[in-house]
Image (cartoon, rainbow, N blue to C red; front, side, top):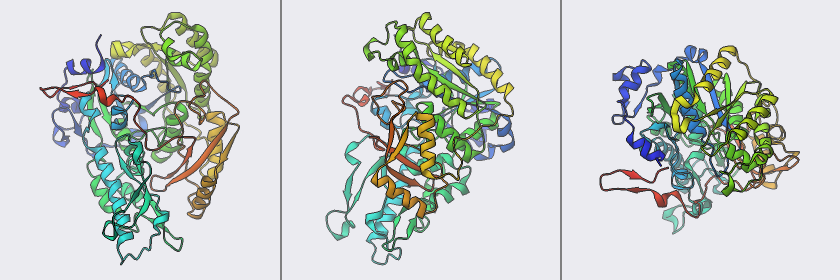
Length: 557
């Protein structure tokens, strides 16, 4: 049986200048990274055109170990939209090497709904992650240098420094470390740590900046710690933000590639949705809206994470709003949330489908809170039966939602033509789409967290730990109380307990600390056992990835 990598390697790619031509981008304006990748200058963003184009947000029910294929669906839907004559670009996040070498493997779609060149996109790509990493770590070195320097006029208290270094790899050993050991010449010893690059505030800033001026301003607003007399210190006080912006000069430009069917694809930025905001860059989304009539974009993990953050954080920062939400579901995921064992998901089990529908039902109900029309895409696998599919369609219809089975892995755009027609009709009928954010910006941080926890997650209350309460006092002192919240939570459950499947309710969401991301423009309440530096699984995907004598990569899936 063919796998994603073999399909990708057999595909015929066209020169990237031909993809650019579809979008009316002049060949001489491209910044080439070989024959199949290029960056596009920001001059192609047209704010007026972007406001008129249709934004389609793809989210999903709560993910399971079986995988739901949200990125694959986003690509397949975009290909289908083009096949029915609606000029469409797909806009996605860049894969992180953490999941690539960890549990997930490749993250560029699958089957005949992939973005290409798949190997390049999964590994290093155009160097954007490296640039984010370098900019983040430059600030860390400037902080340590300021502490070390006897002529330091900022008087930074090293015990208050909250800025961490980052690396694009799952490495649990770096979560908590001590730096500056080995004598005076090596710095001042202090507790420190690493986050994964996708969780860096610099990544969030890259994704939430509308232009270079805003990028530099947001970098300057990064909070790093306090002085010995309790005054806050920001990156601008260290005069680091200019050099950080310089490191991000090329990384700030969106990347143009193609799907397996030569649909234009913009891939830019890569924050996770469980520990960050989970959406691609504002400039890439606006670029797609400027150059196409429709943009299909995705938000990471389930609607409770990426979807909520897209609407409450990204839409506020960018000034756009989706005209349709697509919630991806699979029969396998419904069975899993209905209590079925992982090794039985390929067997017909209508009772488990019925029981697990509560998870999808909750996500659909959540979409109603924002006032945006939604449709369900059932990502069909060969083991799914008609009886199981019909249960989902009937239950969705009873809730007032249309559900359509699609086969985009095996058939590409042809496998989602009917769904594309439905989406087209929805966006045509919602040209003046408005939406209602979940909470007002003037609400307290506590009330914002409570609004998300009780309305989106189904919690009965929120419990703030000792450290979180101290963080809340600092947030109020810094006058950052009006920032939105970006909750770090397990993606596996609506709750902060990854083992609670379905749609749990009545639980208490426990917030143990709150990280300040003043530059990005939000705060990060951290719940449960979630870590912003993941670890590798017992058998990582890295064990299966290899390189042959001809330079071909194998083992990506």
